[in-house]
Length: 271
Image 1: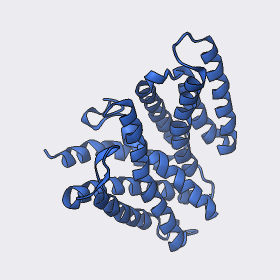
Image 2: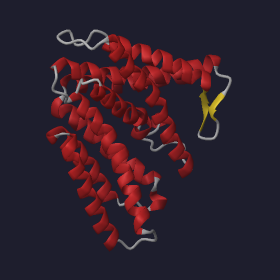
Image 3: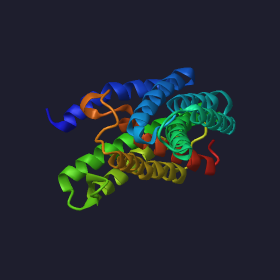
Image 4: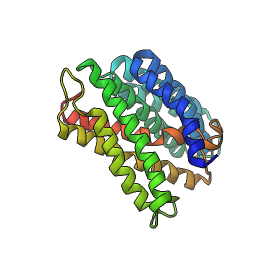
């Protein structure tokens, strides 16, 4: 079986679960986000173990940010982040490790912001009040846009790739693959959002802006994680998904793309 076929077959059940959670929304989606967040934070702590992250504070912070965003909204999540800082300070003060407090606390909060808020913005999109179907379509467009960008960038790179995009960070990515993924990822996201929801459809220009933001930020999120892995000297963040790496390897693009989609929708008055 080819690597692409294996990748697709392995991803299909996960994609179906994600789509089901998005459609149902509520605590089912939040629960899935919590599971993904805790596993991703575990992988992050392993990746950054040389910096001695304060794992209990990291886990508590990711869970708190996601829960508070769903239960109280984005504004209250700042309180959860502040609480994480206090917990990290206390743990650092009592810990007997060979690492400076600044590095320990900083790397812990970095993981909470990257993972907790990355997943939290996906939850925030689904929790948008106006009109109900809009939040579902917006989040589905994020998922479909990210997946399409990734698949078409891979295919485009294999078929037409000549120029390396980031030779040191991610040597397999090409400029040609990036462009193809950007164009077709935007197209898929646009089609998903076009004339949705029926009760109050977004304008074509608005749909294009959101779809483009998702397609741009997805590869940046992927490169961002690749940069951190290269710095840590590892290929994958985990082995939970076998040859497909860890959970963080699979959601890295979503952490950036979902945040971008939320803020573009906010600028358009659709939140």
